[in-house]
Image (cartoon, rainbow, N blue to C red):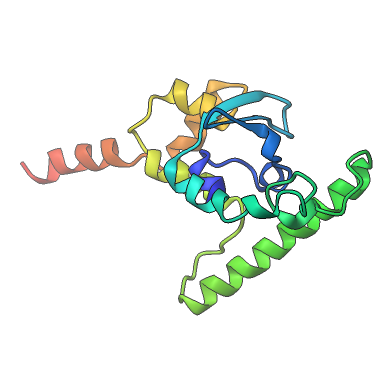
Amino acid sequence: MIAFYFAGIRISDIVKLKWSDFKDNRLFYVMSKNKKPLSLKVPDKATAILDLYKEDSILNNGYVFPFLQNVDYKNAEEIFVKTRNATKLFNKYLKQIASICSIEKNLSNHIARHSFGNIAGDKIHPIMLQKLYRHSDLKTTLNYQANFIHREADDALDSVIDF
């Protein structure tokens, strides 16, 4: 849910979040994939989840979530391996949840990104979505959103059928 509340932030970036990344009710982080900095307001729903982890901030070595609590922050390979292992674990749990809920769609961590895009639909201007997604090229955002925006096609179809 944290990934969704922060506009589909990648799970590898979620795992690496530190409490020091939060200031004045904002998340400041640099996306691992393209090294782009971003600042996002912390939604109230995200705050409710984050509050559940606050008391363990010292135990977790300053990380929000416990997956990197014992990692040597100078050891990039160790961080990579533990992040990858956390991602695999999340995917495993999502598949179990899907099975229990009779969801046939292949759930994965990346689905939060798609869920945000689907709900954003045509409600958010593509340039703002580009910023939220941290895409370098607007074409990438437009191609991405094309999978979710159906209203115009539905309206066009209705205009012919409902004459």
